[in-house]
Length: 63
Image (tube, rainbow, N blue to C red):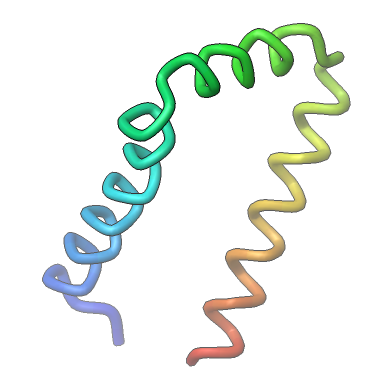
């Protein structure tokens, strides 16, 4: 079962990973967001769905 320490550890790891790109390359991060703003809603939803499915697959594989 998932305890609160594991949840907070996972959240901390997500924040570290999410912070790597803006820290390492702020200009590249800004360009990436400008490109994302040009995508249609359906394209953004597709990428979000893919991320959810990959995350669930990883959790299933590790669990």
